[in-house]
Length: 493
Image (tube, rainbow, N blue to C red; front, side):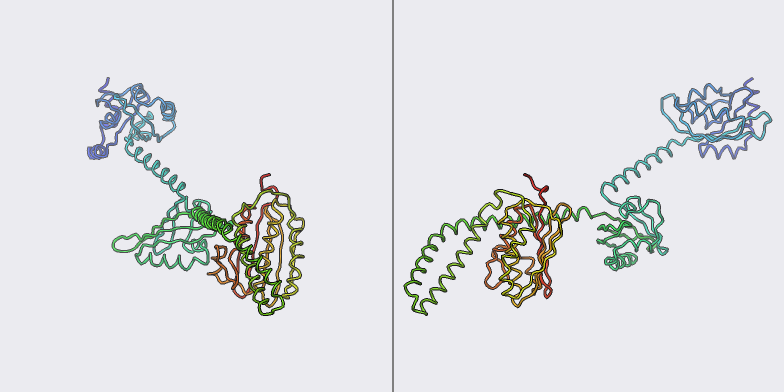
């Protein structure tokens, strides 16, 4: 009976050359006869299923016993479809040693039979599937690493200029993944000010010179990001055929670096203020008492020699200089004292109007006009009234001194996003950039008779109110000083 069944299988009529090719390629053949519910296998098929090869029929139950339990339902569904035509199926088989293999099988109706026999091939694709899975896992891990590092890569063909981007590059540029980007379109994403430098580096890359640098891009939303890029030329057969680039979004790092620098600058300034404070405390004890004695005797001598004009003029000069020393001492003592003791609600617009009234006579004498632009309403802040007045008086005093031949001071007041802005703009000569960077350093001044302590005191008071002081200036156009103070809700009770 088995011999007759084998005779009915078309496998025995295969050309020996075809059989040899199938052996080399490790492709197994099988022939299914639905009239007896048996199949016939080639030697390679037995090897794939981990069975001993023989010429007899293979019952369907034997086949099912080798199929992975999770794949049996799909397999049986395809078996039932034998009656209607071909199929293509991938499933797993479990060998006697419990090894699992992935096989791919294809089948078509037999051309040598009238009873709907089915001829099929089966191939072990375990190694291929393992490789595919490993490649997919590697790709996923690589994409995840790129996303964490804000890192992407691109590949540009030469000379067509066609660019392929990784998904992370699309995210960095704010574009939908999969969009085809030409070289000309890529250039439109570069900030106009940085475009010449990017084009120069790309040109050098095409000449075979590796490049590295930073530039800015503009996203479709208008947001600007800072990108660090490395470009490597790819050679083939002695020619440069591609450029491979790696880009990293440095925006967050740049912001962090700027914040760190600002913190370090503020820390250095704090150290300087601390040193000045310690110095002030020492000076106060050493100078205050003898200074009081000198001023007292000077006043006495002025009374005794008031009729002697020469001596009186000399004594008056001495008294003025002693008063100047007293003023410097008072500023030093202010640096040594805690700045904010008790905070209270303050209307900045009222404070500014009082200060303007106070300095008004001096402005008239110096031919200086004061213009105001106060928004309304302005929320209250929390602060120390007298210290706030001192801030504004110091700023206006500096503005007046910057305009010895008259001019205009514009004072603006407005609030935005929980912050009150007080801006002073003068029409003076302005401050050179080198001097502007040093403003606020202890004892540094641009004035002939200045001490360098006025702005230092102003900064310290502003800092003690949790505020900020910004100064910008341009030679020939004047100086702008802006005080930023948090509104009432922005400070603790």
